[in-house]
Image 1: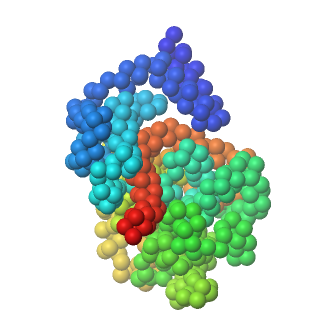
Image 2: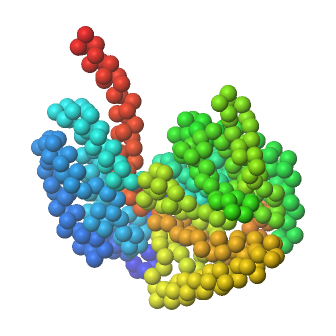
Image 3: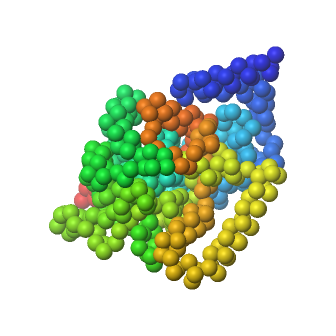
Length: 490
């Protein structure tokens, strides 16, 4: 009886038309399957539940006594994303929805404690002292980012992922993209919440897709026709406002990062954003990131000068598809923003056999595959090094070899990997024309692939999102508070 019920509920999850329907079926599935008992039990080999339980009880006791100094001291003792192992992805694979109740309760208690310290109830603690704590806690805890892989015509999967995350208010404020991922990232990062709500409406998405359908129809498998510059420019002019990275950040509060690769030898790849290249225009950056060698000519960047006029940026340089060198720029995001939690929307077909929706597979067969792959990669790198001089005699072969090595040596995994259900995409059709039905299917596939990850993302990012909110609110209030104090003093 239970088996048939879980089978029916799984069918309900697969047939859900929105996240609310999927969530209701997932919770019912956990109840019928008996997983709720696992959730309510603290015990697990995957994290130090006794330590978390002790921390939870201590915070509850201090908060009930309104001991602000005690709460601050307790939080200072340990506030990071994977404290006592509770960020382990293994804790999210057993149930269809959520994880151990102890973990959920602890995260909620920390958030409530942070709210208490940020409120007027904590007046016995100086505001500067509290703000210093919040900034240190934010730095130690880290933050999340959404990285969108190169996608070609599969970029519509990324749109579905972004839509699902945004509707549930868990879309990270730091986004990166290369190629098709850069197109989607720019759409999101140049529109405020009101405009984003409009463009993500199904009818508006369909309208935009219909207008750009001719652009994608120029690509054919095996014999793709090079897209004319004016065609791409026309589409991007409509889809992406003529903004710099700094202007987009100011307009939306979202940090856009676009990966580009150098077309010339001896030049390194770049990650364009409001920190490293604030005055560079996003539109040209996206065009460069989507310039697939052999299908589209390298692109020159543009930037604002000190008078606000548009001019070439590094005029002697040309740039191409960022996925060739840094598809998922995790290290750079860590260095620039303190990101330590990576959500990856991944549609690269060549990595699907080696990754699951949460982490690398750990079954024996895949472990052997990964080990074999690492050995093969080292042998290929060594062989390429030995053949470097002979290969240099043929510039075309040398360039193709370097591109292949760059693609092979990248890491395509994150903490949470959102993958299409239909994993075996033909790489030769990444630039192929997609019909309206296929495009809608890709968007819906992105949404459905994201739904099982939303609660995991919500729990794992709730504290960092609260710290973001508190720092923003205090920074806004602080000048007014100081102004009021000055008036009273006068």
